[in-house]
Length: 407
Image (cartoon, rainbow, N blue to C red; front, side):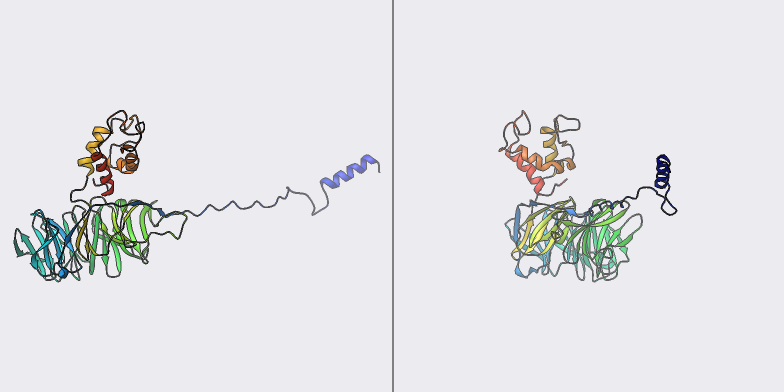
């Protein structure tokens, strides 16, 4: 075989080979699987702040009991307890107005005080206390289980009642012992062994919250959300997401599974939507993702009045947290903003942030406070090239934040 012919044979074998050895595409090792995405953390990250509220104290007799209901009627601050009805006086004391246990207090549209008693209802007009016609309309024994604005919620063993003006509406819901809120037309019913959401429109409907999560207490929040305490005390928030709902735990950090926030729900501020909590023996207010805390002496009962005042029943009597006339955005902050801020801090203005609405102020209030105080250097202080805000104006903004961003 000539060399050239031998080369052709070797080339043919190399290219074709024998049966079963025909080469195919190059065999590469399998590619490693793509790395799994890190698990998504659905927790709500809570930031902490200090709650520093003024307080006012009144003494109550020792036999007034540990329960408490509060309302303001015709300029009088009234407290109902196990021993009767009391008026809180300007000197820090109290005066008993009527004997017999009072399980609920409510201010009617007339300005009179409605007293809910285990055996019926009474109305206090001026100094006189008379029986209410509600006693014949609502079969007892009945209890006041909640209120929201001008509406009162009552319950006996078989029925939930709503009193709005002079209209009494019955809901066939048994064994309700507490009603929370009414936010966006949604309430939370605390019943024996169950926590439910009650939607009033377009037709009354109920949805269990404790079947999805071992919830023992909840309050409704804006936008279809709920704040809840699960069995064991951990705080959760149920939010609407992608056409469904998701329970999200509240934590101090997204990656720290051991830092769940634990608390007892005390109630919902009817004006701001913030939730009052008992946290580690102290008092807390949760506003969105901001938890403000203050140490507090032991208290046995909590009451919220119609304007959001928080009252605590302590061993010494009654403690109100916050001022009787809190700072409000519409009355004190917005006029200040209009006069001193929005010439620059407006949409398409010369300086961020925009400070035209309550929500814009709420989000940016810490930035504002950091730039308006007397300790701020002249070149950094706001308003620029103008007289600084007075100490009273700075204190007004700080109080508005501390008192819960009242509208």
